[in-house]
Length: 290
Ligand SMILES: [Zn+2]
Image (cartoon, rainbow, N blue to C red):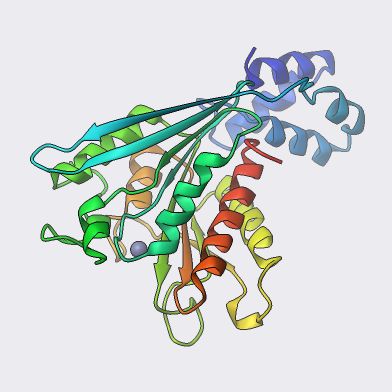
C-alpha cells in the first residue's frame, strides 16, 4: 500500500479526506503524491492532529535494502555514467542525487558516492555521482563541449549527448526530489563573493521547507558564522545563469530540486560532511530517512 493510500485511509477514518483534497488543490499538487509528512503537518496545522499523527505512522518491523548498479552509455563518448540505486524494504518516495556536473568540485561527487552506503528507511535513493566523467578525469570544471550545467535550457532539448543522456535519465527516474551537489570559490552574500554555503531550491513551499531542513542540519557542524549555510532560490528560466540541470527539472518537469554549494576553501572532509548533512536534511523532509 502506498503512502498516499495509507494516508487516505487514515484521513477517511478521521473524516478528513475533504480537508486533504482541499489542501492538495490549494497547493496545486493534485496530480502528485501527497507525502505522509505533508499530511501530518496539514493535520497538525488544523489543531485536529495529535491522535492521527501517531496512528498513521507506519510500523517498521525491520529495514531491508536492495542495491543495484547500472551503466548509462553516452553516444559518441568513451565514458559511461554509473548509476547506483538503493531501495528500501518499505515503499516511499524517490530521491535522485547528482554529483560531478562540474569536474573540479570534488566534495560534491565524493559525497554523492558516499551515499551508496546509506540505506533509506523508505523509498528509493538513486545516485548519479559522476555526471561529467570527462571533466572529473581532467579535474576541470568542463570539457571541450563547454559547461555541462548550461546545457539544460528549459523548453529546449539539451544540446549535447551527455546532457541528453542525463536529462532522459532524470525523466525516467521521475524523482520526488533532485539534488545536485556543487562547490563555489566564494560565499553567497559574503566575502569572497560566490554561491558557497548555500542550499538553493525550487521556489515553492515544499522546496523551501526541505532546503531549510538541509541548512539546519549542515549548520550543526559550522563553527564560524561567516560559513553558516543559507537558503537560496533557483532563479526563473529567463534569469542568468540559464541551463542548469535543477532549473530544467524545476520548470520543465515540476520536480522539487536543490543545489548544494560548499565553499571550497575549507578542508575536503568538512565540505564532504556538509554535503552529506544537507542531503540528509532534505531526504528527511521527503521521508527517506529520519
Ligand atoms: Zn558547480
